[in-house]
Length: 75
Picture 1 (tube, rainbow, N blue to C red):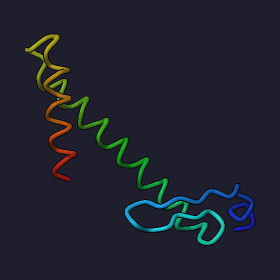
Picture 2 (picture 1 turned 90 degrees about the vertical axis):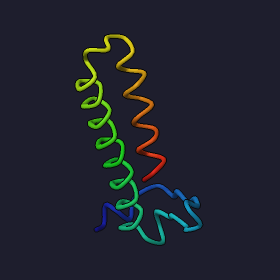
Picture 3 (picture 1 turned 135 degrees about the horizontal axis):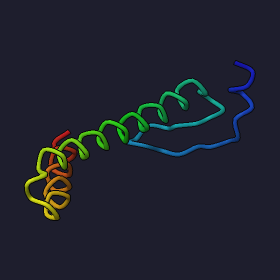
Picture 4 (picture 1 turned 60 degrees about the horizontal axis):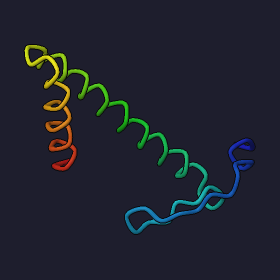
């Protein structure tokens, strides 16, 4: 826990909640873990969609991106 307290001071608001590395270091780390998990999961979904649409050749990346944006917007 000592290393967590050595984090540089970072403070910002996200969805109306304060994210602060000094006031709540565990919440700060959890915030970034959740955001990182979103990136990984949506990346895997995008690659899966592109593989599923392989018959469309070049257009598969476009359609995979469109579907991915729609799913993310609904999330």
